[in-house]
Image (cartoon, rainbow, N blue to C red; front, side, top):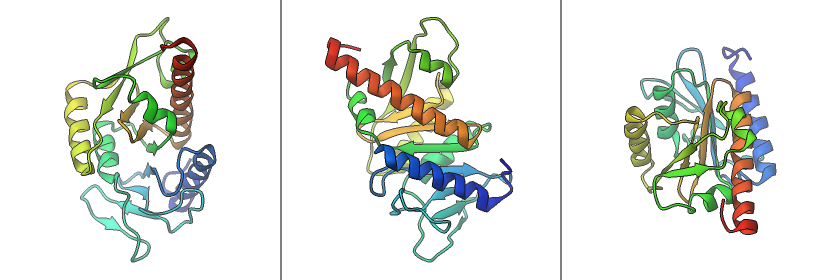
Amino acid sequence: MNISTLTDVRLELIAAARYFYQQGWMVGTAGNLSIRLSDGSFWITASGKSKGELAIDDFVRVYPDGRVEQPTEDSKPSAETAIHQVIYNLFPEAISCYHVHSVEANLVSRFVNGDALPLPPLEMLKGLGVWEEKPDCVMPIFANHLQVQQIATEIKTRFSNTPPQLPALLIRDHGVTVWAASSTAARNYIELVEYIFRYMVAARRVFGEV
């Protein structure tokens, strides 16, 4: 991928959003996707746009100094822009940040009362960079606040002190966010974590526990 070709990267986000919409992970206008460019700015889906019908002008460009470039007057950055900014600042290797809303993500976020979700030692964890036999992994959980900046601040504080094991986090009753060194990897990460969530929901139904 040539990250200097702005139109190309937006087309990648359009394709990913349409795919996630078809899976039921970005229903209506829910969720947001972004991709970072070589100058440190990033394109992010505009607020209030159907993720199954995105067009090239349905993105807003956010610069490192906070400046926002709006293709149209009614284009506003996604409400979760602050979270994407924090992720890119914390993880310089990250090129893409994807956030989706699935039924399973919200269900598993309620499986524990604490701020970390234990994950089953599935083979799928290898796709998220965990190459251990019977790995002991957890996914960080953050409270869902009306003011998204509060969520972003809590992410920054916790990850600055304790880096996550996986490039993913859950916001309780909200959805999952992943980040990766490419848009292709970010799409794969979403598929992998959603598979793990589906397994956890099914395991609880069948066995009564994960």
